Image 1 (spheres, rainbow, N blue to C red):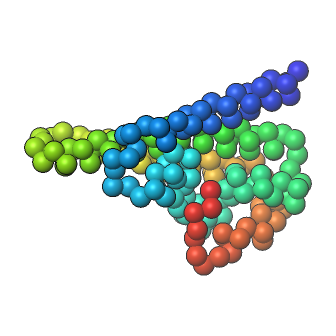
Image 2 (image 1 turned 135 degrees about the horizontal axis):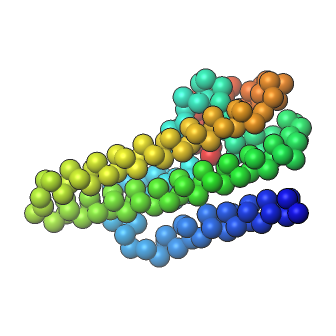
Length: 175
């Protein structure tokens, strides 16, 4: 019964996280921004944009990469379930925050296009974007910290021996 409930929660989170950004291509607000297409895509899909690079440097594992290496790491069912739940919650939150960032960046763009705006409005909008970006970064880092607690020391060793991003001098957008 317990596993059925966990499976149901994972399914629900997956469904909800995919629907959060499913229609962004039809939304004209996403076309009116100075963000690059890559940045918009990253924000709308929950990609870290290297916001969690500090976690890599100090050996905090990426939940997505842990799931990719689950066989090699010999995750228990409980470890896998906790990792999936943590990853899905992080994605749900980061996708929502990313969508809000893109919308606010678009609004900022619109204000500057009009050339007639109140600087207090711009300041408020810029501060809102900064807070959202901070929360987005924290969500990625929090998932990494939690993930480290889910793994044993032998699993962490195997993870970091097989993590191409960790072993690479170049940090790519691999979320």
